[in-house]
Length: 194
Image 1 (cartoon, one colour):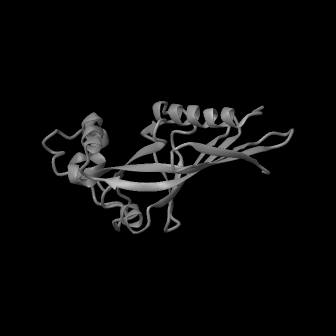
Image 2 (cartoon, one colour):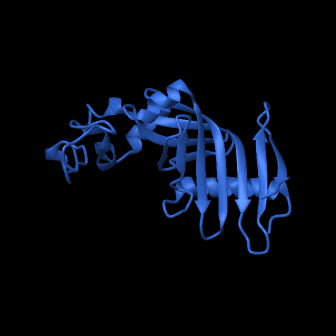
Image 3 (tube, helix red, strand yellow):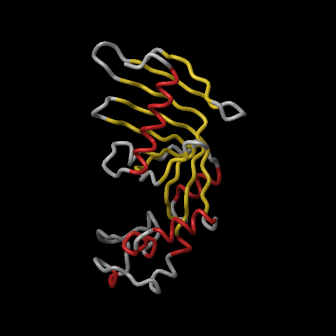
């Protein structure tokens, strides 16, 4: 049971840190919703606990890139079924195709992971089921040279969090807390009725 708002905020922090580091964490693949009311599951690549920002990877050709450029508001939904804890986060997103953090993320990726950015852009119509990859790269690890043309399609998406809604489901009674980030970066919390 959580009796203090500071404990709830610490729980949020710990879950997001683990979610970014551990691919088995239920917080590793949250649902991300852009302001155009489109949702998708994305992999949480990093969480900056000091700056309260989330990092994801995206394709510059994906529809969410244009949606974020038009309206940067996003929501991110995390759920840990075992712990029965839901975190709803809101913030503003930035898609960074050419930032130092993007170069670093690209360099750290495997050639198999980077291969995704060689294919047709997300949402490109096809007459048959397709991975979108060029046929010669299906099931094949591309060389560094083959990946040169993929790099312009890769970007980092940062989400700067401004609010959190934490919910613990329990048969003894659900418990909920909400947090808003002040101008100075501090979180102001309060208990909420579930």
